[in-house]
Image 1 (cartoon, rainbow, N blue to C red):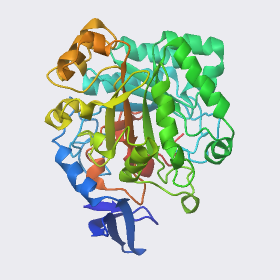
Image 2: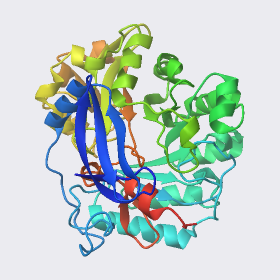
Image 3: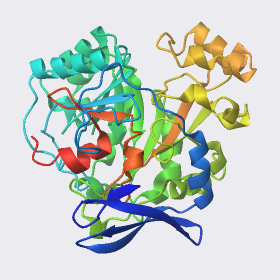
Length: 435
């Protein structure tokens, strides 16, 4: 196995070791010597996660050749073990914030021209034929003057969902928000805290009122929304339960995706403490008073099972029911493969094939019937409820990087030259100097 030296970023050999139930990466750099990094606080979870792994699915076309060896041939090359489930496009280097924890150290650079963006989308479609999800990022993608046309162009090519990863500030502009809603995007809304001082620490400004108003706008305009909190140990990890409660109570928020901070981009390592997936799951159980338990979460087979844990919940006005309470999810986990976005679809039974399909339309009668077939429930029992997700995704930094995880990655950045770069590889090897 290979990892990175935390000091110089050189690719070095690593091994895993267990101490007091914790899992560490042990590495030796010829220049900087030995180092040890915590990657899991639960050896049982780390080991059990691997049983959810499965062989990947290759794209229709490789976008680079295998010459120098991984990770130098990224693009993606035939050494990679997974096709693209999420194509990320950084359409601008501009941003209206300067967050202390930015992956990209934005603002940096200008807008990518529409003609180049359309060519990048064309490349994505040529590699995957029927891509499920395109995620527009940056910088702040809503600042791009052609953002509406970009969403429309992607959808006209048959991409099922186009997500906009946004800090939400432009959603407060009424005319813009209304026009964006007409394109039917999925809003990935940066939402970290309810505390003004914590907002200043994480984002450089008190944005609490603006974030809540952005959620209200999404509810009012019917835009499917996922809240994306970046978690920092000792800063906002005590708000995990409150963030879940808030997300589940919103009409158009269909999930919350916690992302423990990774030490990349603008993050200052000495001042930032990271969290492992088991630590977050333990906090979820404690802070929801057991309404969501650690055992309600499962790794998903795509990307690597050490990267993501997810739980599906059936929500009504008074009750939250994890799907693990309804059916033995482990019997059907393979049906969840290659799916990273769920609106009002669910994970159960033979109906999985219908629900996890490009033809599935959330909220329709057929969708409800499939859910009922899967869960053994009747339509009246389901009406007035919704299915939402709570997930944790751990991106890798120099400390936690493992080449075998990156080779299984299905979250790929689409570069202007059409090459597809696994996200964590992009942050470490390809982002520097761009823009």
